[in-house]
Image 1 (cartoon, rainbow, N blue to C red):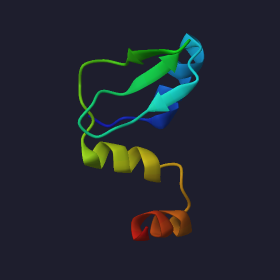
Image 2 (cartoon, rainbow, N blue to C red):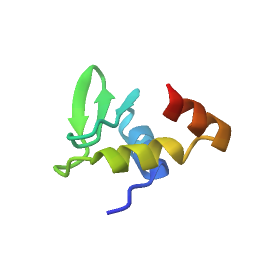
Image 3 (cartoon, one colour):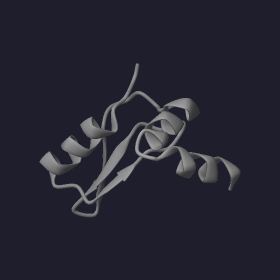
Length: 68
């Protein structure tokens, strides 16, 4: 299932979240008033997380990210 960063950020705004957690092997989550709120049960794969991260980076930034 393709995920879109904009959808997660919209949900974060709607719920009043302060942090978005995207971790391979875990469902996406938000921090809302010092509580962790899961955004479903489906765990993100490593490729899901990489796709989300690289969707907001310029090609040069992706290259730097992959090298470090």
